[in-house]
Image: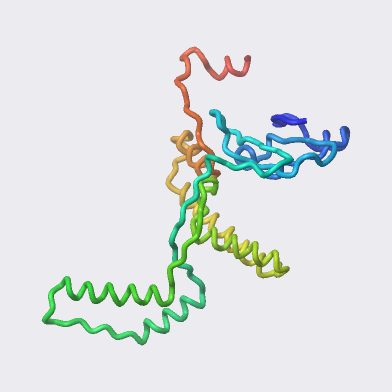
Length: 226
């Protein structure tokens, strides 16, 4: 049994029909509205991909053969600098002993190039560049630094170091909350609800549907009666 179960209680299907859901990822926003219920294991893989048609729901692909490939998924290599408390302490210790001498007989550009070279060498020494792959399916708050933290959490979980993995997960949650708060901070929810919901959709990684101009005769009363 498959479809949009927005108005149906999945627990009732499980208890009365002895069916088990196999979709474990959100299909609309943060909710699992589209699901597949089976009486026995029949599929090897289940993937949630962007729908090929105009819809705010994700598409569910279940197959028993080779894993399907998301053709709309795009990968990109990003460069970032990892920052840890240990790196920050070492950088501050080195910067406190650093003495930069500027030549008084040199022009402004020469002194600037010298200063820029020193700062760049410090960055490369204590915060070396790293590259990581991000995809178009990642939410907007998943930047290269967050992606690296998520991969570290997964490695710790596989190694059985659940305590350290939990600490990394809390750090990721704090970063995501901070970014989402900053993203919604300048939205006036009282005067412009449309922009507020648009920001919410962008935070959740959803694409807003094109809003068509409504007929002037359609009111809230007409919609409620309909």
